[in-house]
Length: 198
Image 1 (cartoon, rainbow, N blue to C red):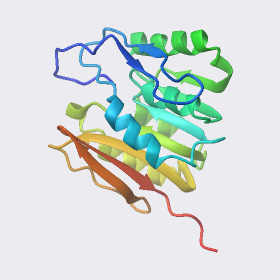
Image 2 (cartoon, rainbow, N blue to C red):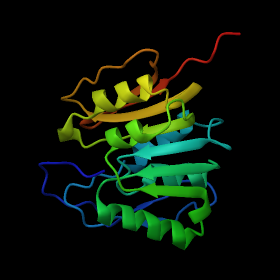
Image 3 (tube, helix red, strand yellow):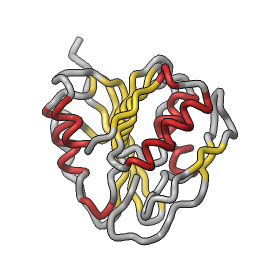
C-alpha cells in the first residue's frame, strides 16, 4: 500500500509463502512509499486465518502490491477483489494475476477504499477483508467505520487491520478484536464480526 510522506521505494519483490503458488515472487512496482506487508507478519496472519480461507470471498483494500490478496488466493480463497487507487500498483496486480492464470478468481478496482465501500451494495458480504492503509493517512478508523456501518463483512467474518504504532484506530461495534500483535513499528489485528446468535 502506498504511504504518504515517505520517499523510500519498496523492495523489488515479495514471495508467496504457502499454497499452490508457494515460493513464487511477486514483483513490487516502484511506487514511492509502497510498503508490502512483511513475510513475518503475513506468516502470522495466515496462521491465524487457517481454516477460514477455503472458499472465502475476500476484499484487499488499499491493496498496494497485492501480497495479502494473492496469498489468500494461493491458500484457497474463492475470489479476491483488489481495491487500489494507484494506477501503477493496480496494473502490477493485474499483470501478476495474468501470469498466475488467476484472472477469473479476482477483480481489480481502481478506487479509494472509502469511496469503493460507499459504492458497494450494503450487506455485500465478504468473508475476509484486508485493510492496510497508508500509515500517514489515518484512514484506518474511517475505513473500519464504513465496513461496520455498510455491513461489508458477513456475520462470523474477519477484518485484518495493520497500522502504525503512532495511531490508535477506533474499533467500531460490532467488530471486536480477536487477535493482535506488534512487529517493529506496526501493529496488526484480526477483528471478528460476531456470528448471528443460535
